Image (tube, rainbow, N blue to C red; front, side):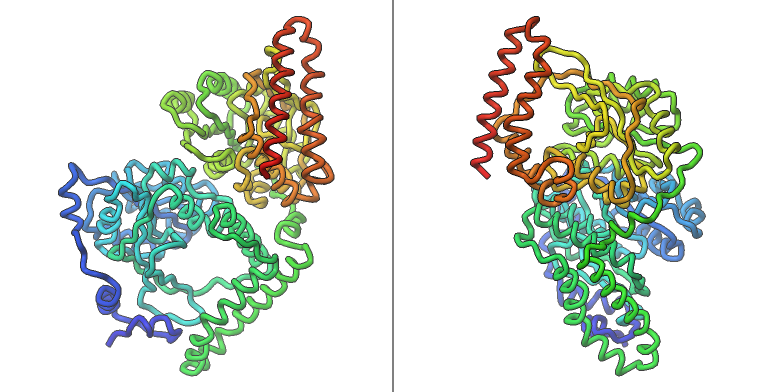
Length: 624
């Protein structure tokens, strides 16, 4: 005889009958359907296509069951995209036997993580709807049909289903997901999005090992509703827990902090918890409250099995306490990882070049031609379109670049989308108003080979001569702003640093990235890594733009305080006064003074523009 849901979650080791489990779920939790999938489809001219994206790594023994469950879906207009995250078991063999016209397989060249694999699946998706599940899940036959039905309303950007702990040996030492209520977290084991919203948001933040699905779901909810589809059922099997050591705990605690910072940025959490208090609540107090009954019950019924299993759990909690000690005394994951040398660079490294553009195809064309003339041939070019247009998309694809649309995203999100898509050992950045020298990439590779300890290389940027008041960047020596017009990083260093800080909304995302990379290795300067920055019209800083800049300046001063004091000033307000109110306009006027005689009217206009900007700066300061 089968067991009830209550039995399933109490911690006893049981094996239930799946039909009874699903029947109990439907009887207790589901309300009668108001409208069937067939009736919804009949109101539409055609069924919307679905791309099902599945990331996998080293789970060939589970993958066959998932693929079989997808074949049994009642909704038939779909394709399956499996992205293999560099598996080392029989996964490639399983997928080679399975793939076909609507069974598409892509393999990452190295382990990039499940979120990067999902992003690759989004890039390859051909349908208007993208559904996600995992390689250890088994969707019920009506899963896709129910998700598609929930997407019928035009205001819905996503649909979330129900995930049930699949019948099997459930103990306090196994991991299983049981999510039967709507709302965050929006787990990727059972969810569907419109492809347009995924492209607009730039996909998942692959710098996270955990939480990127929840962050994406919260950002999607700001753009529209995520419907709840209780008929979309996925079963999740219990499996042995992976016990963490001290270093994995430090990585998890660091991810917790970044996750909570992002929740505050999104307005979901209003209060910043004290540094050590949050992980104590998350990983000690909450598990004790939720799992103590299950432990006592299992220990009473199976004392020998419990005695065998409790040892690894106790060691894990000890490692958690040691990681919390590291955190309390300032020896967090990033600082300890900084002592680990970067892996050797391969003899023929692939270089990923990331170019973020925004509706400037005439400038981007020059950048793309410069990249096409590079003497270093092992490269890939990734164009992230900050304001997607057909002209930019066609230009990027004509030049052989990968094209990633990222409408309405911040610069930090756009650049991180490029990093998530990059596959190179080295990730180089330039902009759509830049012209890299033909030897640019070759000299970047040479700089990393010359000094194997380098985590990054900044190059020389020469500003093009233009009209008085035009904008062009000059970088003649190591500049702690670490501008993305001409800089490259080892991919390993970017991964350890966690990628771009996505809280920066308009400025200093590149500076903050450099500050974090420095914890893992030095950033060098190479004079022969040359880029010409084209002169473009200066975009005035009005009151609204000043507010964005000041918010990001204050965030840099607050969250990167040691780096900030060393490179920019004693604090936020003195830096704003010295650099922005006085220093920047004075520096600009002195630089343009030699050309004032040839264009006195242009010089006078520049004076007036700078005075007006300072007035708006003071107004923005009063707003804060």
